[in-house]
Amino acid sequence: MNKKELISFAFDWIKLFLLALAIVMPVRVLLFQPFVVSGASMDPNFHDADYLIIDELTYRTRKPERQEVIVFKYPLEPSKKYIKRIIGLPGEKVEIKEGEIFITKNNETVKIEEPYLSEEVMEEWKSNANFSIELDADDYFVMGDNRNYSSDSRSWGPLPKKNIVGKVFVKLSIFDFLLKLKNSYGQT
Image (cartoon, rainbow, N blue to C red; front, side, top):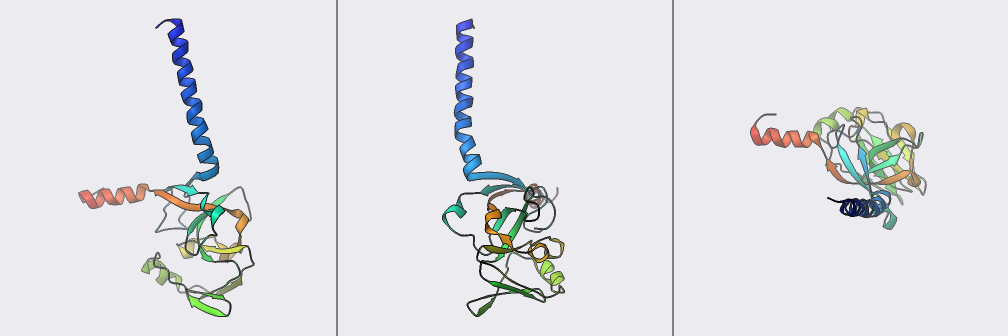
């Protein structure tokens, strides 16, 4: 390869790198963001070291909904990010009575069904103390799925809407992969 071909080859690689950067960076900055789960507060649905892709675009076009799993800036230390499930929406009253959650809005109270929680988690959690909070117009009430081992709105209060980063879009889990492998081959 002569000097002219080498320069042309290097220039082509630089153009390819800049093009890839021009495509990937806006997607990464404006639309999606990686997040790694740390801790057991969302067990059994999300495990420590699960790799998530967070959708940052959806909440620009609509409001967060109950039972969606979100990543947000921790209100007491915004440099940290947490993952939790939305339980209460703005303007609602959230009440917890013996492990059951009731939502009141416009003088109507409904019990929240939580099919994503295992019977084991529900049984262990039913002994929890009662709790009640009224949410302001821009506040959300969030909880971890592993209720007895989660730092959430029960301990540090409502989550301001401005702290929400986005909702979980994709989950890549080594735990799920190993479970599939075990089921396929009968061992891990």
